[in-house]
Length: 193
Image (cartoon, rainbow, N blue to C red; front, side, top):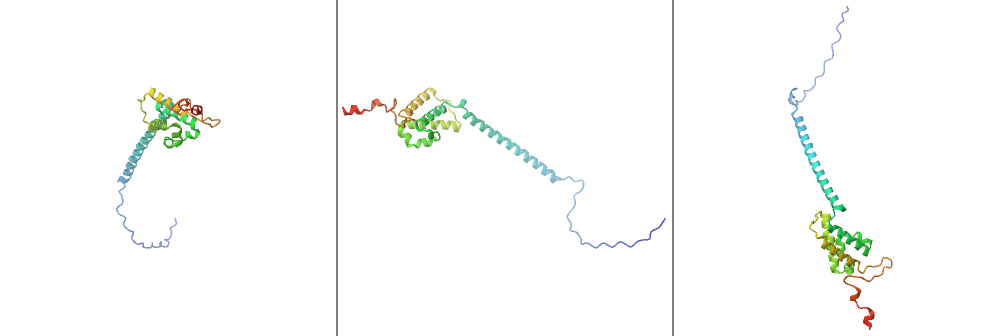
């Protein structure tokens, strides 16, 4: 066996300045309390967020179903159906541009007032306004007298159709019924006699 001779001594390490004291270190068995509290707070926040999100979703779904039920033709009230009939008659008399007019625009339209008369115009606007409240306000009045409403609509349709312009020639045609009937006006042969 060979014995080795002792070798050179290792070099001495340089002296380092002292390090700052960072405070006491956690004991290895101590629980990590801030970590547990962070998990608890995040869990509660996630649960609250889910509850609020589900609640908002239910509210939006309920509103969407209400609007769909109002717009469903089977669920339309008698007033809304009557207003649609009157609006179609206005479109037939005054032209397709009246399909896009709102009730407020019809209220202010001088042509409609002039052609229908003040009373008929006011009734048309009142019917369309009441139907708009039911349709867009989702407040349907179940106590509508449908017989009286049908009579009112038929008189409005007569006054709208009276004196309508011909689609082919654009000339004014004589009214066959309504407040300005031909019988009430004197013809030129009667006045010259």
